[in-house]
Length: 269
Ligand SMILES: Nc1ncnc2c1ncn2[C@@H]1O[C@H](COP(=O)(O)OP(=O)(O)OP(=O)(O)O)[C@@H](O)[C@H]1O
Ligand SMILES: [Mg+2]
Image 1 (tube, rainbow, N blue to C red):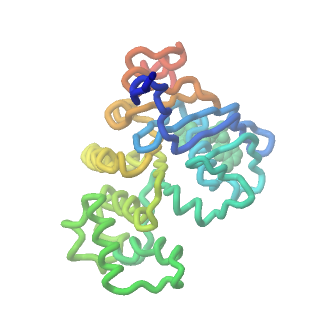
Image 2: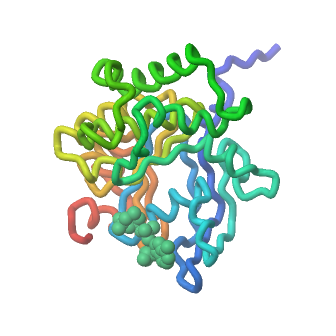
């Protein structure tokens, strides 16, 4: 009798965090994304690079549906987050935003205490109408701050205002921390280090690397060295299209397309 060992079968494909099919997006009559077909893997860091205006932020904003706040955005095609079409009528935006957290270029903590920044999203999503027992709240705050490597610095000033007395690096880490209590599976980061100095950049990069595995991370960056250091796969976009998506080292060392080679060698934008 023939027996089949696990290794002799076909390899199971990697689990996907985000999958798009023929995604096209228009701002009014201007088309910003063309036939984007991406399979972004679970549990790794994927970087998204390309010249200014190529559609990186547009893509990120489509995944958690921030784009649709603008009445003139139209989308064709599909985006799935863990096999669920995010544009299906049954999808609740609040649920989607819980699952997919977004970090922006400028750290944007709320002008309330460090503690309340971290509890803010949790209170909104909490069925008990925002009421949380003190001990539960303490656990949530400590866990989130530990995950972003801020606990030791912040534990004695949790009641201080988050917008005063924190470095940009600390604020950006706090902005990552406040996403975590609602247990997102995907973190989207749009140039999260571009407002930081080199030391801050290194520290936030280190943190992002630290979070890998626990979250699927998609990070937009203009900094080629950062993409190379801090991601396992890399996507190169040009004028609204995906040109290449490969393991990062491969994309930088042996790119398949001439446009990719031109970009990483700094021949344009
Ligand atoms: N709200 C908007 N309304 C109209 N057009 C927009 C809007 N946002 C972006 N665009 C256009 O869509 C295209 C893609 O923009 P997007 O911001 O996604 O690029 P990007 O790759 O993130 O650029 P950058 O590196 O400068 O951040 C650009 O031509 C831009 O002008
Ligand atoms: Mg952008």
